[in-house]
Length: 83
Ligand SMILES: [Zn+2]
Image (cartoon, rainbow, N blue to C red; front, top):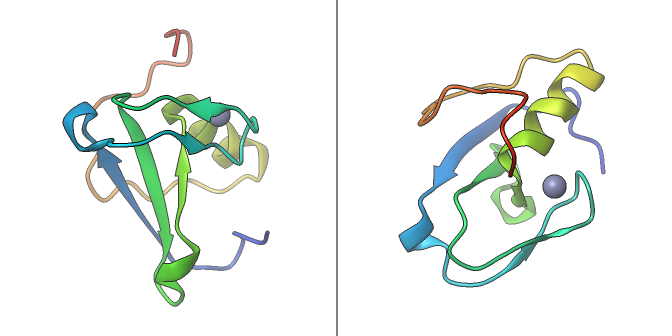
């Protein structure tokens, strides 16, 4: 899916709000229920929102050379932190 060129809204999902597991498109792994993560919403197509591991989203941002838009950076990114 093409994220490039889109305006994205990135929000954090607190553990208490993560009511079910999601599939992360970055690593194709599961984000378990109750895990802090990010939801990335294309502003023009909110239905295409995706849930990402925190680390995967920032890796994706570096890989594609785009700086992730951080509307609400709930936590500072630490590339070495385990997920
Ligand atoms: Zn992931």
